[in-house]
Length: 251
Length: 337
Image (cartoon, each protein chain N blue to C red):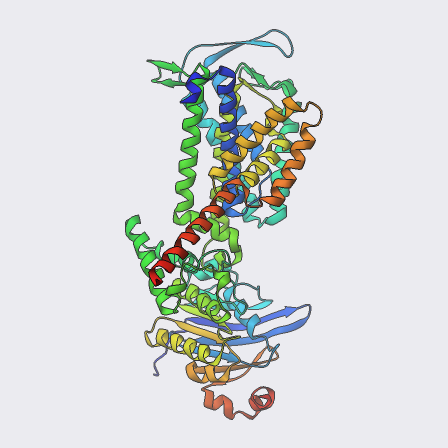
């Protein structure tokens, strides 16, 4: 008997239709703990919609989403986040009028305050966690600045830091390097790789930048017209003639 | 110490300003910190006043009807802890039930404001029409409301009773209530709970995406604000020994929003500053310009919102930021030199 790793996230026959148009069409897949999975595909393939269905920000037309075997299909986003499934959106979604530190503090305290212990100790734990995250995303020196004053790349990092602060089990990252310079993209890939190496989290990443995908992906899934066209290692996917035709060939 | 030597009229005026400041504080917790623009705090204000009046008269007083709308109330001395407690708990409980249906029913934004606008209107109509309704021994009195409401008294039940029966004593009680509610609110907004409230105001969807059940947070702050408005209402009913359907009036709700806006939204102290300044202006202007004072006041409100969108306390804070920024720049320049 081969060893069987139970999926941290299972999606079965997930479908989302908008006024009769199938944005996600019967997708079935499983994500193993610690896996870094990239979803690639042309614009309008249904990648972001798929991520929103897993995060709970859209209700599926049919199909199921299971987390550790529990059906979470009809759970609200906050309940999914409490199970450790946290989303970084494509368009940065920050607390614009709050400082960088306060932006990280809100998600960090959610994670820390659920633990038992004296309130003063927990407050210290929150502050220490916030400092760790700010150092990790390279924004420690910008912590007193308002989020609205950050550059585009810094905003993306802050958004990643906010997701990290919740100590997620599954990170859903929608185009984490969108609009970044090549050096910022490399830095982001390095940061996410450090997390993966530390075995801290599982990631499902929607991404267009193939350099980034090459850097980080353990498994690549190609979406086209709402369906998973193929999946495997990046080399396997790149060798697939269908994929070259619908996506990679266009580059 | 000034109120110690002030004429009674002015002490009562100061008490009234502070009582309205407490009402505005409840609006600031909701609107200033959580982004929930409630036009319904008068509902909880009125409920606090009516609950206190009905409970205390039933507990301590004998009511002898003289005609359909007139009666004599004779009260014995006694502590008023239970009426005060109920005057806080009943509005809080109503806020809890109302809030549950609104927040768990996903009522948001303008729809929340409209519902909160309707609730005091309904209560005003209901109490106005309760002409012949009696609760225990006290008639609700319809438009005339309830009169001869006894003042609060401290002490030990059955032993020493200390009635707050002078304007100064009552003023000190109001100061204690204002200080208590202010310090409680200040503490609340500085806790992790308070930070979540601010994050809901800034970006509700994002806060939810981090695992916070924002409905629960909104429900709690709405309930707390209901209790604070109740405290304000019960104090108001004892200030003039009188409560009427006016206490549910939309004008009071709208005014409390204006006080917060002019004082400074999201500052807490601005609620008291706004209530004090506006009511003081109302008093001065109504004396000086008998026919046009409302017009002058209205134009003043519009001008202040345009010139000082952050309110009076916001203006002071802005000035402090500028001074601190200048000091910081000078320090950096000195270090460089």
